[in-house]
Amino acid sequence: MGGRDKLRLDVGGQPMLDRVIAAVTGAGRIIVTGPQRATAHPVTWCREDPPGSGPAAALAAAVRLVAAPIVVVLAGDQPMLTAELVERLRMSVTTHGAVAVTPDGAAQWLCSAWRVDALREAELLPGGSMRAALAPLAWTPVPVEAEDVFDCDTLQDLARARELSG
Image 1: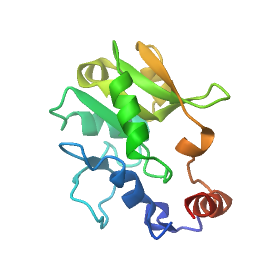
Image 2: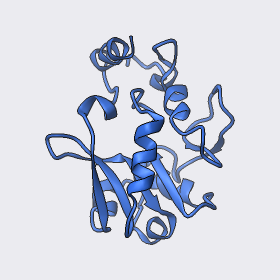
Image 3: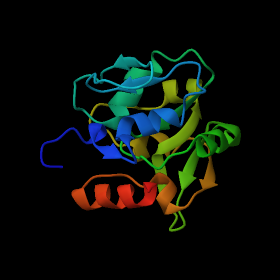
């Protein structure tokens, strides 16, 4: 993204991170892991240890702050997420969790919902893989379209997200 903070980039008239947060505004508490930045919504900030050590470590840091029995895990660069999808994930949690799965069968670990006690037992290690930590848990697949969980990693992805949001 040319060194820019991609979560601050505009998609559909608002920063990407704000679009993701809007999908969970009904939550009792919204926890965002990473460097603090301005948002349109009240959130609790935390950092993975060490900073920059990946999504598994970020999730481990956030889970320490969760008091609810179920937590929704989302990536900040998925601007097409909706409250409806978040609710489907939350309502699909059975034994341990529920994970969005695209038509090609790809599990979207950063678009999922979990029982907090299961995450606290998972091996969420710095530099570790979300797949390695979460795949062994008992989870329910939640079918989604690829556009529902579209993430922005390149300028071309950003252009596509803007097109989809318009």
